[in-house]
Image (cartoon, rainbow, N blue to C red; front, side):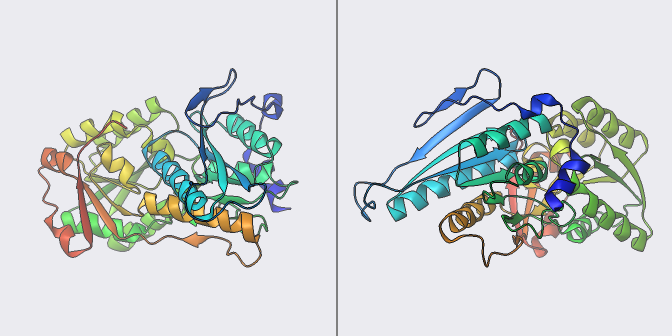
Length: 357
């Protein structure tokens, strides 16, 4: 089966991966297990008014598992949780949910979290980002628990299509449009840095698309890859030393986790960083055009409820979210002395400042 191929290709988990986390149950708030990451647990109860709760009460359980903690994934998980609460209130039911996260995308911890969700007999798993989705699909292979992922940029490349208990939302990147933005802002760009992580399946296709685009324009490019915070800082320094005019990073969670560590050096060097998600921009990158992650999280929760209550029959392999929102960091633009008014003719522009979230 495809899920068996995924686990063979992606994971070299130790025996520790077979261990499951011991999670305490509570109605709301935050708890920490003795051998795992912090777990936020929430419950949405039927309101006193509105539809009557069915006899005996109806309760569903959902596990939201983030690949790691960072701004975009937090936004998606929070939006999904808020929508689950709304669904519960609207339908006179109870939806219990947990929000957990891998530590830096650690596959062993993600496997533990997925196994724990299955052991807890949840009605659906909402994994956020590609690695979390791939591991959740493996964990649910025997139980066929619905896996409704969020923010997988390339579900086909991630081998998440054609699995009858798996669906979700895709934030596939419009790489061409972002590079069009780059050239609209500075038509004199002659060398572009491509900064990404080899461990991110999200990055493979947009990096290939970026190379094809730049080749068609006769623009040179240099690549730097990294997997840790220190490596990312070193990679950014290398691109500065190589004299690139701009840098492109796709929806890469590894690079995103270190954006706060590199944005000031890039701005001082006069290098705008174009990225695949607004979370980068809120952490100091120059600009992006992409999906609204609150909308994506909401849509994913709706799909999860559909899967729970109606089954997976008739559901698509995945659902592509529309983008079209240009986000610009005005503080970084000022540091770069970059005029971004040209973006006004390309779409809806949202201005943000730098926040350490």
